[in-house]
Length: 193
Image 1 (cartoon, rainbow, N blue to C red):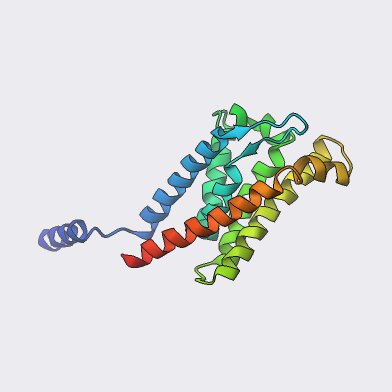
Image 2 (image 1 turned 135 degrees about the vertical axis):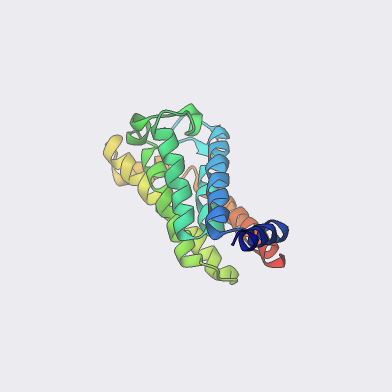
């Protein structure tokens, strides 16, 4: 019996067998760290409480690379870190209070955005389908963000859109295109193995 176990163990080590759980775990950890990095690259804007950051890029990219469930899990894990008090949100923000503030809607929408991208884009090799998925993921972030701005800032819809969407859409189009290129690159390299 131990000979069989030893044989299987040596084969697994020799062939570099990776389980799906291990692959997803590494991917989730990577996207949690990448999103933390993306939050540290933040530029405050004087006319809106919402800073420009790279968090949206990693939220939609997580869904495109990891799929719906693992992508959403990565973003949920990121939120848990920030909610627990680690300063991983943009501009060093942390805690449950940050999630209830004016930028909290974008943060709370991150798992939804990753899930939307992964669900719609799936493993489709089609550029059009992936582009639609990434765009709808970004829209999910906007919906969450604007909804929270309406509640917290007590602004009208026009004002909430002016504060939470208009300053960001051009940069977010760039993030969508970057996510498309990065996801396609990652997928083509994983297919080459």
